[in-house]
Length: 335
Image 1: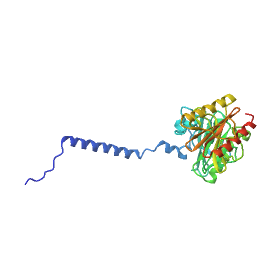
Image 2: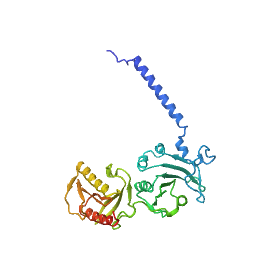
Image 3: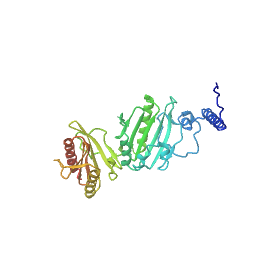
Image 4: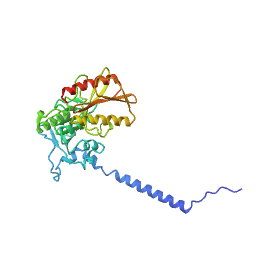
């Protein structure tokens, strides 16, 4: 009887095995060496990496005044333009660029005591107050609480955000300690005082919407591609509560009666071309158009220079009530 004999590996198999072992050794050596190399991004987050001898190569001015705030710089100021913004806020840059972004100045500051607490200041120059308010309103956090510094300012657990003139400001801290949050407030006030003080005009869009049922802090400005429609730009929106229904009203100043009327017609036709159904409904708004898409309704009309309406309403009756209030309000504005 023959006994089984293990087959010897061939030359090809032997060579493949040697090559595989060599590759694994190279990878293992690379991993071993990598653990001794610290990521520059990690180093940049450490205050001690920036405290002594700030680089003399940077001649940028600090974006914010720190006198009396208990904060000192631990990184040099940085400046980004439309070509380099992605380097700082990749993933969010498109929102700013589409809203008229001009430049971003940033810098990190640490507390004198305790030294490990620090903040990063972001000062976005958005060229106009409208653009600054737009990015402020579009990014409002759900846990926002009024900051009481200027009209358009709010706090979250570890940060403060505000729109002031042509600037949008973010101050983000490493923790939620009372001392750091107090310092953040002082920094924000110093910025406001250095840029016209509290006398700077309120947010654009104030007064466009009737007050009845208006939800506080819901005003937004969409500068481009509102509701997914390319032609809708400079659209203000606000949330309302009408008979238990949460609704979104919109208004846009198109400068002339002809432009407002033409855009209202174009927007309606576009929705119908996408499958919305035009319906007849008795509404308290003369000349309005109503379209239905699945189980929501869109009311569109113009009053003088203003394009206006109610967006994606679940209740046609409540939407009609709001549209009537909005039309009467715009008529009083002399549209």
